[in-house]
Length: 463
Ligand SMILES: *Cc1c(COP(=O)(O)O)cnc(C)c1O
Image (cartoon, rainbow, N blue to C red; front, side, top):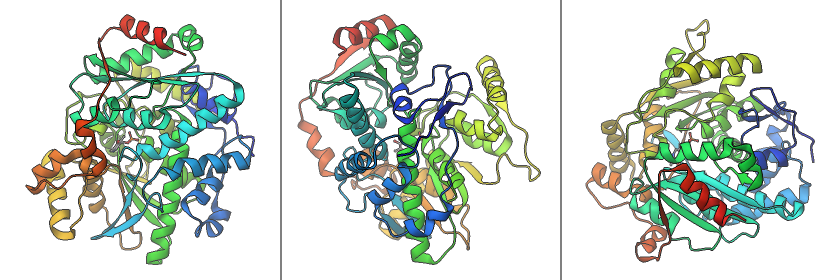
């Protein structure tokens, strides 16, 4: 049990422990929480290489948390017992790359890896403190269902999930609204995802409301989510290095909010031999533009085949920027204020004309996404979901003879059956869990995109 303290990227709050940082979500100065220092794992790598997924998760997480070892171990075992594959996150060779399958959890998306753990962690902390928690979340699809499945049926927790009415896929909607546990409240908001997110942010920034109803966050600003994702970078690197004899690996990561790739960046800072992180976006390319030009400037969100990456302002980007600005909280505050005022910020390029020698980036359009799905199915008999396909496309552009490429597979193809049909001409994307949803009963409240209406709904049903 370590005494790691967490600090805000904006530098205006006192350091707090792990459990408090999990319950707080966003720091009270508006910044994001980070460990005061990143522990080095270089000396542990050899000893960790043969561990199982859950054993490895224990060794990594114990460096960051203030929980007794036995409790952490039980928490991890419980969280990953819900996965349908014994390796939790298996690595599969496909063509010239390795695919890291992160979709074997209850909702078939990589967010289960973090949200199963976070659900159990919330419960443990609340049981110990006797407190309660009202989770408020906004989702464009995957986060909502993974969060609901992470906390359904748990005492001391209510969860309110807003999604834009009729603007998430019917399947994603059913994954949420078919959960009938009395602690789960689905809200279909008559508006866009940005409306939902805007209302959520305003509720959280109303500190008296936040405190009175003990509001909790499950989006990727919560450090526990990033922490649980660090594990699979180590796990996959060990599998691939053992198989190929390589001394390093590179990862291709389909990216939206920068939470997944940030975990890879932290793994690299811990000393995992990652030669390159390959960031892949869809047409919503603010992050790939940033890593290629140094300028981070807002565009319009356009809908794509990979809706979980249809994002312009990436909520975890601030954590990366903090390191890029040499952990200077004052410089970060100034940069974020400028971004808030103008919708744009920039960093100087290095001597190689790059933002960061570790991070390569590219954007992928719809035709290219469909083509990768078609090609991998035709040539390798392997189905990629459209998010994974975006990562594989950019990953293939950066193949290296000395460093095998691991592509993160973030969703099961059956979640995006229409894209699979469009790409292959065949109805191949199915999974029994999803097929069963078709005639499941559902429960959901439709509300206007109005802050007061949501506020009333939450306060009338909060614990
Ligand atoms: C959330 C999500 C992503 C993007 O992950 P970030 O952490 O937001 O970068 C990619 N693919 C799928 C399927 C997702 O659900």
